[in-house]
Length: 434
Image 1 (spheres, rainbow, N blue to C red):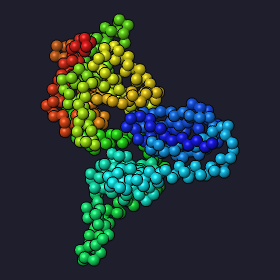
Image 2: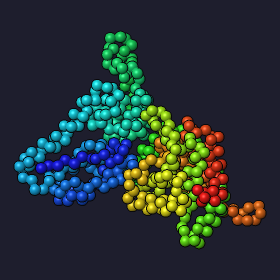
Image 3: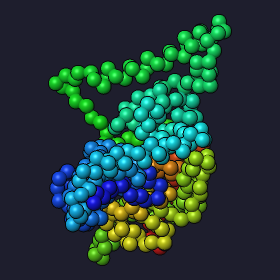
Image 4: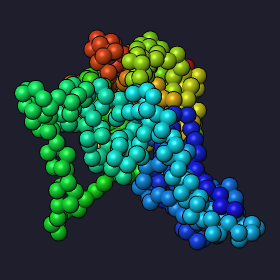
């Protein structure tokens, strides 16, 4: 019997995944629960095991391909079954193609769905995420006229940049006015945007010199690429800076260390952020793009940006307001360790309401961090600097940067928030007592 394995629903809100690595090849024997394929989504990277024993048949996608949830990934010939089905092997392969066409046919009744749903129709709308399609509609851009630069011709947010919107007349009546004298002029103007599409072809096939190479974002780098593009494209950022005295934090870290308790600087900033957010609810929110509204959160799930070999990952410490500094330090350390090994669980990268990124652990005295979409604010922590004060005493200081969504957060609100944060960090007893 031929078993066709489809990409499962990996988690809430996940509609597609990227094939990062195949652990099996066609013709290989595979056992139940043996890892078949590594799949990356915008939430997490997971290894998917085989649900059956058998022999691997056709692999439908190459590494780097984007696959929708519910699409067939590979065929497995289940062991112990008679060989009769062998002559019918081509049939299941065709059957896997048939559902694609069947899924697309119900779409035409509603125009909005026709734009949203079909992604693999030959000669139709190319591959694109729901966000890309939505932005294209808002700008009046016809995806059907575009050639995507992403995998399998996928249209990305970057492709939409600089793409001229289709004139209303071109969308509503492209070829129905040949008689009037003015119609040909309108038709002559419409093709002006057409040379842009072929213009991409030479760049794709252009020969490179020995000192050049092509880098196509894949895996985590692709997700970072798309998410950062979307954040900067949709959210109007502004950043505010503040200087804090780090000495009190250093003193408490040393005191805890003498008592056998290891705590780094990061938990102080995470905990302080949660305490300050209680007084400034507008910064503890997420943007609902579909309904053009904000959701204010009454819980404090703080994302912590972690540098991994594959790129930046944001792990989430849940319910920070209820946890002690010591417990939080242990949790963040555990999350960071597993993030670098690609072992985070789905719920450990979901649901953040505010993010803290510690740039200074490597270098950098100041930065303007990009908001972790769909949140509305992010705190940047930087390198500790030492200076000699007017009294001749050595002092440790640090700059903090707070980037906010200016549609919701006013400059005055951001200034008050960072001032509150400064007060907590310079009086760590207020953090330790919570």
